[in-house]
Amino acid sequence: EIVVEDWQIVSGQILDQDVQQVEDGVISKVCGKLATGQCNGFKNAAKSRVVSTPTLYKPYLVQTHDVTHKAKTRDQLLKHILKDKKLMEAKFETQLIAWCTNDGPNGKKMQQLLQDFFDWLIVILCWAHQIDLVVGDFLVIQQTVTKDINHALEVTKWFNNHGTALALLQTGQFLTFEGLFWALILPAITRLTAHYCSILTNLPRYLKLKQPLQICCTQNEDRLIICARLGRNYRRRQGIFVHWFGMSCFGIDWETAIRIQKILKPLAITANVAQASHTHLNHVLLMLGNLACIFTQNLKYDKDLCFGILKSLEKP
Image 1: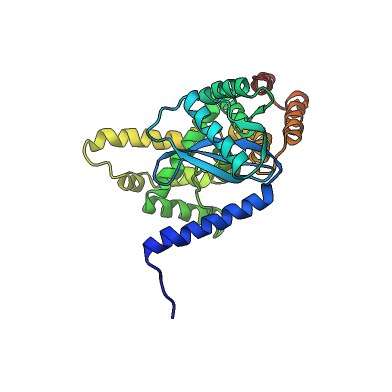
Image 2: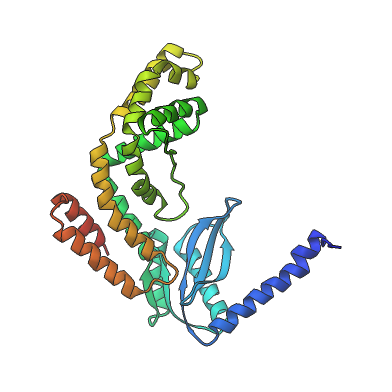
C-alpha cells in the first residue's frame, strides 16, 4: 500500500533531506576547484523578480534572491554578489577567480565596484546578452523589416485566435498544396534568442503561405469580417479591419524579409553558442572573429548594414 505523506512533512523534513543531498553532491564535485560566478535577473512563475547565481565550469545554482520589493541598484546587486561569494568559498569551498554579468546600467556600475573591491578578480561580460544587443541594433537599422515581421506576427496571432478564419486558411492551403497545410507558429520569448530564432524558422513558412493568405483574404473577405466580431461602430471598424488585414497580407515585403533572415542567421548561431552552459572565452573569441569575417567579406550584404553591425560588435 502506497502511503502519501502529509504536505507539511513533504515540504519540511523530506524536502530538507533532498536539498541536503543535492548540496552534498555539488560540494563533492566543486570542492577545492576554481570557480566563475555569474548572476542574472528574471521573473519566476509567481512574477517575483529574482537574482540567481550559478557557478563553476559546469553551472550549479548557488543562491537565489527575491528582490521584488527592493530597488534595482548597483549597490543592491553588489550586496548579493558579495554574500554569494562568501557562500561559494565557505560552504562549497571553491576559489572564485572571475565574475560574469550583463552590461546593463546596474551591471556595468556593479562591475566597477566589484573591481574596486577585488582588483585581482576577472570581470567579464555575458556575450549572449551582448549579441542580443547587436541584433537589437540591427533591427533599428532595418526598421522596415521590423515592420514587416510585426505584420506577419499579427496575422499569425489573428488567425490562431479565430478558429473559423484558420479553417478557411487551411482550406486554401489544401487546395494550393494538394492536401497539405502548415501551422502558423507564434514565437515564445523563453531565451535570449527565441524571438529571432523563431523568425529564422517561420519566415520561409510565411513565404510559402503567401499565396494561400492572399487567396483567403480575397475570396473570403465577408466571412473574415464576421469572424472579427466588430460589434459596435461596425461600419467604421469594418474599414479599419479591412485596411489592416489587407496591409498585413499584401503589404509585407517577403523577399526582403528572406534576405534579412540570411543576415540574422549567423547572429542567432553566435547567440546560441554564447548562452551555452559550457561556453568559454576562447569560444567567444572565435565567434566574434567569424562574425567579423562574415560582415567584412560577404559582398552580398549592404555595406551600411555591415558597417552598423561591426560598429555594434565593437561597442565597449
